[in-house]
Length: 281
Image (cartoon, rainbow, N blue to C red; front, side, top):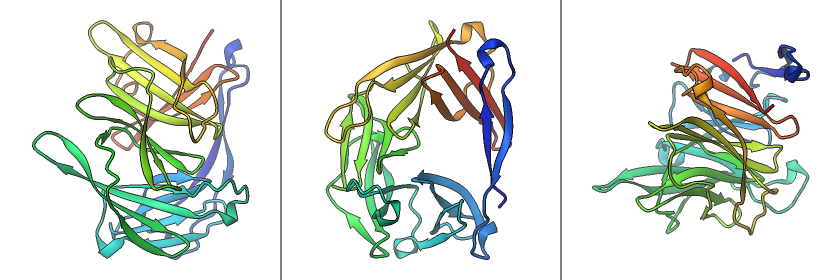
């Protein structure tokens, strides 16, 4: 598995200079001889990547791509869970080597009404063991891939009554629902992290009245005890741009608050990738 870090130079783009993409550094391969068995990266936190493997769906690996170090993890009872997210206990310890990392695994149950979160397990790195989490169901359905910020996981989620940001606190091992900047008029939602301090959210609206994409950013740095407050960072009107399948399939994005830019990466059929840059004049 050959992996590279790419840098995108956006300086001068607002003055009609083309952006440039360069290879910053080639990352180390996995030190384990089975490094080619990695299938996909499913979560990342603190520079660590949580990946699934090609040949054994019940086996996970946490990989430090800068050092090449790995930690192979067998899922509980050899069973594969559909969703995993990596985080850590937030004890305000700046030294990453002293952090207590955990993995949350969860599955959905399809009922007569809707999907609901049904089963939760957590893996602790310190004890190298899995355990079941009981009575923590948030009563809503995760509708986006999770992001990790300051050790905690965040998703866009909804139930029959409302939509929210769903937070899982790896310290208390409890869910909490937080405010969204909207309740209606969306087709797809994606989350990202801004400088490890704030959450960012893309809200795509492609209904009969609007072809717009709203980018929202939390107004202040994430606080453990406070609800979220949002500001509308940027609006992209696709009535002024060609609307293509690449536009509708963002898989990740980055927000540059200082230069008022958003870099979006999209994927078509897991083969063709496309990068788009939007900025405010």
